[in-house]
Image (cartoon, rainbow, N blue to C red):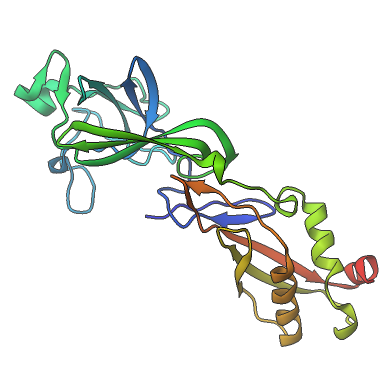
Length: 272
């Protein structure tokens, strides 16, 4: 599954992700605090092969889902004595968010003092921590200063790890300021080699910076005269730096989209 981000000016997608809208996280009680957590699921036998529910979580109520809650529920969890427990499941539909699943019906004899030992959980879950460095209308809502990762084996907490992205994340004046970006692009176009035209030629491209902020991947999304295509690619590759964001201390290859307008107005305004 992939995460898609759409912006008015710079539209980009993550190379990793979940949904096209920020998803409502589960809640986890850990060390006395309630934090957001992702990547914890219900037992596998609750789902069909296509990941739809094999049971109705909310009894007679039909399951609901909205764009910010693709699973149709929000679960609450607790870590006690290094053991993970499921403590509740609630509907997350706007008009049905007060509906709670009956854990006694769903888990029967596994329920003990209102909690279910989550012995089906093996693998990693994570919690975004600190400030949201850059919000995106997508997945977990963008990039954060830190992520706290939990590693479980049959519900037993083996270890935690705090990833520090503040050591790596960098921004660029060109991605933060569209006026500066436009000035760089259009001032570096070799207008003298382009034919004079009364109509506007639009070249749509996508570009991907590497972990050092250098744009090393540029592709055309529209086909125009070759001279315009190549000039668009050339000026994009001239950008000296671009922002880079990290998730769990690893650079995320972000795809950006941009349109370059070869027109009389830009020629006259930016031609050197």
